[in-house]
Image (cartoon, rainbow, N blue to C red; front, side, top):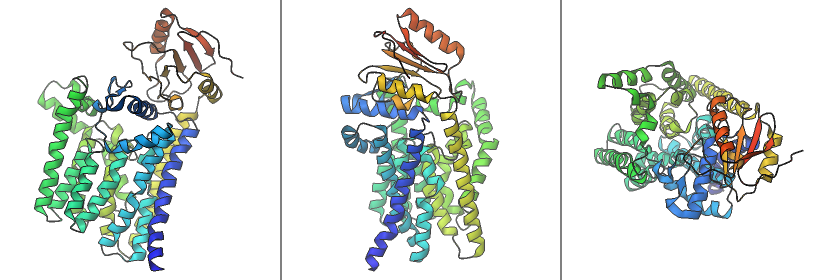
Length: 460
């Protein structure tokens, strides 16, 4: 009886974590909150299924693994082969994220909590907005970084239990999710060195992270991209106009000391119930990634639910566990943090949904999705892409060097960040007309051009 109860203690919050993460993504999907990552992920997996690891990413114009190195998320390939739809990818990601819940329970027990209190904290992790939010921080939100959350949390568990071989296995799995996870694993190495006190394990984790990160960023990614892709240029765009060392330092400091940075820190502090000198040393693990995020433009820290900061959640959760006290003060701080985190997630998700719905001609989009042949190539010009059309076509964004698509969809109803200016659209349509394309469907905010089949599409 006790054994079955222990199983239920973990499985109930595990299932809840999966259900909420997957369900939140499906809300976006069903309401046409179209985002570029959905289209990019779909065409990447279609390419991998058809062409293997040499598949290309037309969104960036380079091979799939020249943008980021994400090997562990390839576990979705066999499922996608059987069910080639975007919900398949999100379901696999939600399942992997849910596997972190047993680790949350075990980590709570390792800090000396009673079984009952550890169960409460397990639910706190399973339904925490800062854990679920990055799962769909950009709409549907298929992101390789989310896969790293589970091995990182398990790494903390094994470190506290002094099971160092398992610890390093988790570190390797985390590094296989994306090259920038090396910043988080390096921080965990610093934590293992001190305050955990295992200098050998800490130094090994730091060294492994530094070697892999440098190898990936300075050799593998440039080599795979044929020299056309520089992940550092994408990560630090404000530094590309710097002309001197002092200018670079000045721009970096300007990015760090901005309101968004302090707002992010304050939000994290309140959302996790606050930290004191008791848990402070354990926050050292968060410093490398936080420093990098703060050096990037403010949009990274302006949204604490973006996937970039997802790998910090296990570190903050561990620190919050160490702060846990049976006093009324702690319960008050915990409840306030929970409320603040939920309100923050609802506000951000509401903003995404509003931008995805407001101005969208859903009737036309549904009609065109049904009537455009699925073996045709389709170029999409939408405020943030159009994931509902991501069934494996050659997806492109304003790339004049790319071979012309058979169909070109233009949507102008949603004026979200990234929407095409009237001048850009006019120039693109002029090129389409010169190439022989004609308009086969037109509505106030939706226009479909066809290059070869000029038969007009009728929608009720």
